[in-house]
Length: 146
Figure 1 (cartoon, rainbow, N blue to C red):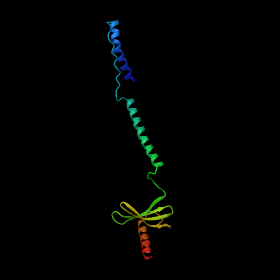
Figure 2 (cartoon, rainbow, N blue to C red):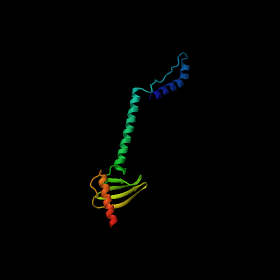
Figure 3 (cartoon, rainbow, N blue to C red):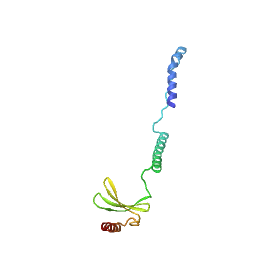
Figure 4 (cartoon, one colour):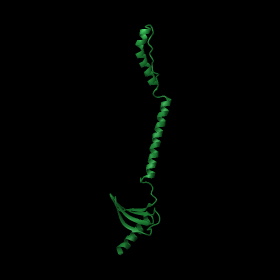
């Protein structure tokens, strides 16, 4: 705003100078210099900092809204991985609890296959890989016998 006022004052002096020169030739020309404002004073730094905080806060709020109100993956309480057993370097069996059912899935790079669906829980809690492997072997042996 100070720059605009200074510019207008200097322009008006330039256009008015020939008129004043004709009336009073002894008058000295008036030169108005715009006020110098330092580019990095405390006011501009505070404005820059508050703008940065506002933008970062806005980014976090928008990300939260996207996660909350769209289908972005997050913690899904309906599905729970009960246990998994590696079969090779890139293949594994995963027991997933979906509601009241448990699903035995074969997972390989680029695909997931349903091996078996159980109405009764095969095992109750996660973190018991040894029990899972033994129980899985029992079920597979029983299935082969049928």
